[in-house]
Amino acid sequence: MKLRQKILLLAIAPLIVALLAIAVAVRHQATLLAQQQRTSVESAYLASKEAELSHYVALASRSIAHLYDSGRDDEATRNEAIRILAKLDYGDDGYFFLYELSGKSLMHPRQPDLVGKNLWELRDAGGNPTIQRLIAKAKDGGGLVRYLWEKPSSRKVAPKLGYVVMLPRWGWMLGTGIYLDDVDNALAKIDTQILGNIRSTMMWIAGIAIASALIVALCGLALNISEYRVADAKLRVLAQRVVRSQEEERARLSRDLHDGISQWLVSIKLQVESGIAKLAANATRPEIAKVSFDRAAGQLNDVLGEVRRISHDLRPALLDDLGLAAALDHLTREFNEHTSIATGFHCDGTTDGLPDVSNTVMFRIAQETLTNIKRHADATSVQVQLLGSKSDVKLVIADNGIGFDVAGISQHPKRGIGLRNMHERVSAVGGKLELTSSSEGTQVVAVLPRV
Image (tube, rainbow, N blue to C red; front, side, top):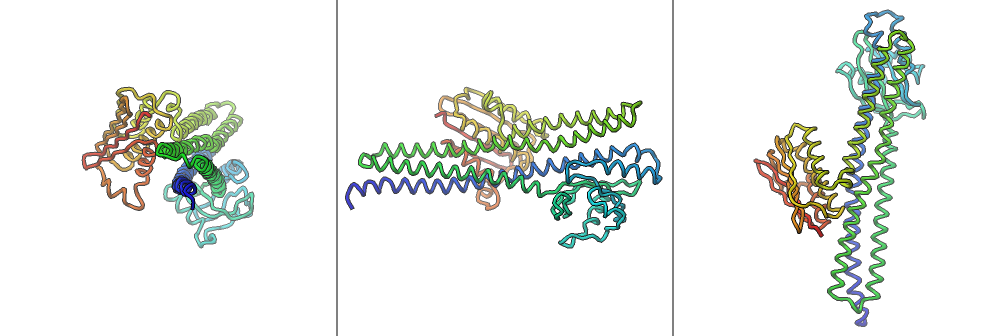
């Protein structure tokens, strides 16, 4: 082999190996992040659905409250209540059902052939007694039950999340539910989008690898120490680009999650329709309908607050508009309001001038640390400091909690994912992270260079 070919081989081979290693590491980290994001989205999605079901059942209960609370227990009163509940629905597969505590079906708008039948012994494909479980949950104070039931729109059995309550004076179980295959479809779409972004990142890495190899091949005879430094700088830029793409994915998810709020609006729609129905039925007593409209207005405020909360958690606007210090101040004030932990924030020196990626890393470190404190530290006080100097910016978060074994949790195969993410974020932008913990508390220090 000629000397020229040896030089080209020695120049290109390490670059290709390094880029392949980076590609493998990036794919692994992107997949891990995608799994974490999917879990977070699924939890938020199901939490919103569970809250939605609770609102629906509360609305149905209020729609017959004037009959149930009247003291009457005659057949005509009960039939009127059944008639009102049968008219309440939301979409093709959203309806309410009624059962006696003996298992007899009193109302099923989508499957009227079940009305009048005793379904106490009804079991699903796994042998689980569906109606018995629903009635047991209602007797236990009400709540959520997962079971299998035929979906009206498709006529196929699908997993369902139901919410049931007792009407003890009449001996009824009232409930409703949503089919979880819709949730699975929504999560599948998110998975597809995330996989597309991962493939796009891999294509970028492949393109950069090919371009770099061509450049090195053309300039192989002039390869020297300075070019190795340039290659190292390019790899750092590539790592920062991966972190930036992850943050852009979070921002996109923030917009997508807004679509889920429309399900909350269905509950508000039902509130308004209930108010209109009450207004028509009691024209001389508008105060009865006013209660429903007031509840609808209150729920609208809750929806707006939920939109702001989700958007802020995924991508805080303050970070882009007012800078890192203002965003951290807002984060600590929110943490102080939502927990019983006294939290203070102090900023000293000049903290402006950090790149956008570094600002994002600092904010995510603070978010992750405060979340860990809330879940695990059992602390009563937290102090957050942002200190700026000419060469770097330092973030210090200290609590007076119970502490933990830093070495042990880092090496545990099923724990420490959050800590690893924090270390990787800081390393990707050339900073360092120090963590100390004892029985007197825990301190997290993140230092990022200005350049």
